[in-house]
Length: 215
Image (cartoon, helix red, strand yellow):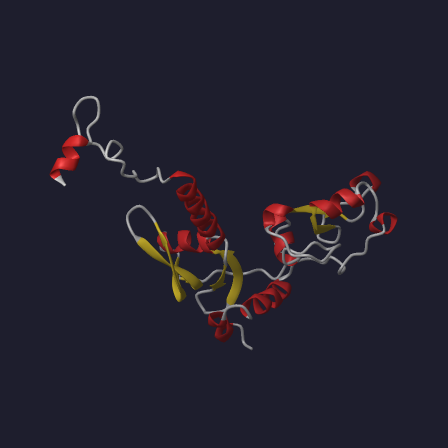
């Protein structure tokens, strides 16, 4: 081994892994790059997985993403009640991924509907295009005004729906009827009742949620 290292030197007579033909971390070539990209994609997807949020009284009040849930835990605002078997790794340590978290201080939840936002519209519509009824990642969905703004349509719960780009282009500046499209369901405000219905639907995918959702 010593003889090989003496032969594997750079122009200044120093041993380097490159001169010896050894791979350096991060320089694995195309295959290594693809593997790294795949891992990064999986990690990004994992950080967007749903986490059930409980009030301090164990009442289910929200669904958030793993990323947000872990921020709340690190800030000492919430603690994990149920965990996944998977981990995410930072530079310093590994963290288990939560499935259910509980706020440490009670939060009053008003009964009125949630704030109108793109995130809440997509959550209400379950990331499903309301015209072709296909499920898409959030990045592949937009919001569509059922009655176009050019016709006086408002940006409201009753007039905004999740829509894929293809259906959005097909519909254009027309009503669904004019474009030959049909809404999957009538859009309604996202109330706490709606939110709990969605929690139960999502809970079918994760048995850890079920004991908190009063099945």
